[in-house]
Length: 107
Image (tube, rainbow, N blue to C red):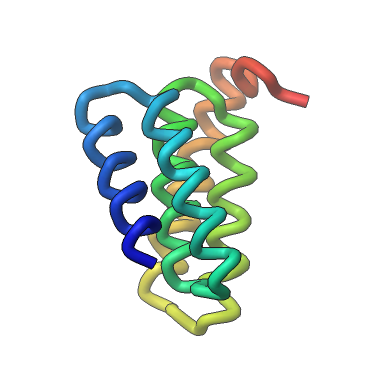
């Protein structure tokens, strides 16, 4: 569990430095740990942060996927406060994707 927190913190540090690809790698590793442990609340939070760095890197299709996964977990958990934030993030990324395209690596 400690490793998941450390990786998440590293992701936040790299994100703050604008190193989105490295931040995404740390978030992905953290996410895997939280999912393996069945810690859905932590996984939902990491997915939202992952969506943020993917959007920051212009990877809008990936960001939408991460935000939507976070939204689904957040709904399951009944965290109504976070639902609005995630819906806003999804709307923003959808708008950016329409303006500029889905980003690199889009399927």
